[in-house]
Amino acid sequence: MTLRRFRVAEDSMRPTLSPGEEIVATDSRVPEVGQLVVFPHPGHDDFWLVKRRAAPPMPLSHDLAWAVSDHDHGVDSSRFGPVSLASMWTVIDRLDDQAFTEACALLASEETALATVIETHGMPLFWSRPPGFPTMVLLVLEQQVSLESGAAVFRRLEEATGGVTPETILALGEGGVRACGVTRQKTGYILGLAELVAAGELDLELLMDSGHDQARATLLALRGVGHWTADVYLLSALRHPDVFPLGDRALQVGMAETLGLDEVPDDDELTILAEPWRPLRAAAARLIWHAYLSRRGRVEPEHET
Image (cartoon, rainbow, N blue to C red):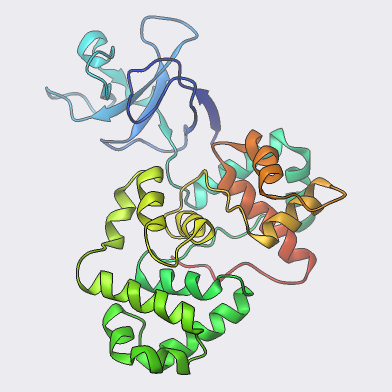
């Protein structure tokens, strides 16, 4: 099982991918129809193509696949024919347990400090949170407080509502939400979010199929959702591989500890330091959080499936 870096050289996959953009692909899984793939050019040695696996226009044997460009003028199977399925590497656009393990191995092979995290503290669990309204509420509650404090308030909301949904939150009302220990400002954010979802003006489920930029823009347009909240939702609920939540204090301190810096980096410095880890910055962030928590005898959030 190998995860490998590739750099896009041509514009045949616009607007999905642009020339110069770096991607990662694995040989450990068979790509599904619709997924981005990388494979050796059938007619040129030492040159790889990035395409999308598509339904073939004619029946193919089980060991062959059809590859297309997103751009009308790209060279693909319409020119060079079917491609060996075994030669296709699947581009990673979401992390799961296996992809995360492969991502950590790749990062550790390139960055001594991250390799030391794994050697010292072991591999972290690949934790995630279910996408949807309850996770958005939890992240709002976690803003500018400890994870433990935010989780405690969320549990009180669960007890008061019998289950955090837009309908139960709206039925609880401002007074009921405030009685659970939620600040006035966050109460307004949560009720506003509940109203949008209940009215059908916001469908959080659709974000699962949205690209990184579109999903992030949708989240940032919500009242009470800033860059940290949007990025942590992208990382933990949507499992995007290249998210690095700037403004996260544990990440800032953890970066200084992991890299042996004299001072805690600010957001600009954090961006520069994390640049070599593209497009797997979410995996790097998870390793740094793991080291930060392990040094303090704490663990990652409960693993969700």
